[in-house]
Image 1: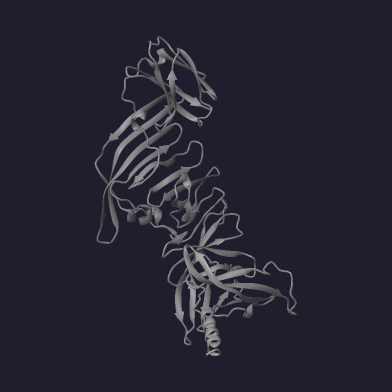
Image 2: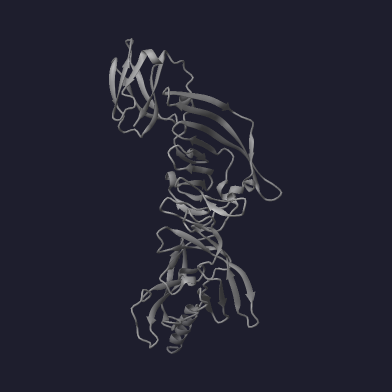
Length: 481
């Protein structure tokens, strides 16, 4: 019995170390980040076609992805560039997976290698050995999984260890998800490393969101949206009334624009007008599957930390402090079939879609461009932002002789605003400074005919000053520089 237990233990160890690991997740698309790029790029790893050979080996090809040249002078974007995994891989029945670089040179991964085992990973102008240096459990997107770590060493043709950027490099292989980290096979043996960032199914980490994910609404969802620039703006209050699954298993929503106010500033007269466009309308339909803007390039995407955005960019984001998946689109197809990136005078356009919150939001980033922002939403118990106060944008009170009774200076103002109210009665007035969302940005009490208030804390923009009590309202607009 004393001799039997160690033998059993050795057998169990061998079985554990030789579990069925894999490099390619053939059941789902996985997404990998470029660890060296100046921007954060995420590209898919998707086995596109399978071909079983006569000896049982499987030849797979990979989904072609577009190449973003980041150049205004480039007229079209290549939508069929070679994926980072290379064009193909051969998965052998003994657990040896062979990938190919751009020169059709082999990169060998032994998925069933035992701890401490060494093999030739690459043998061309240089020789690269891989050693299975570690096997252990690792938390991957909240899932505990067994992971193998491969460590590289580089030799010359005389088998001398040489200085190389890949010496000591580690790649990891997960039993359930495929590569946790991997080389850029197409450009191998350069030092580009791809790190696993997400899985499409089940949805883990970063994954591509679809139209149904973007427009995942429920009855009673409420959205407050502002769209425009500093000179004119539309304000919408949208309420989801119904949702229904049709025969094609697609959702159809009915929504109502409960309030719609148009606000406009005339810089020639320094006057502001606000018009109630609607107060309750005929309900309208929204069918996500009919929204063609979310159709192109549905699986390739990237994140850009520099301000440039490409179609299909998806990430966990705190954009506008909302922890939602984000999809930004800035590509469209011209009539000639050319995918182009939107530039105007060097300024990029960005349409942003939020998971469960609709879109597009965003727009032109130029000074007078139209920007749509989601200022407030309510989805069940989830509430974020400040509701737009439509009544303060569109006041219902009678304004009393605003030009003669109330004076403000300087206008524009930077740090302080002087308020002068003639014929002040013997009771106090409230001071309200209202931004162009109808939100109160500053408030106080007017206690004398001439009074100064601090405004240096206010963001730049156009504001409405209201001096009011239960009997009267005096209004002036001013510009904060």
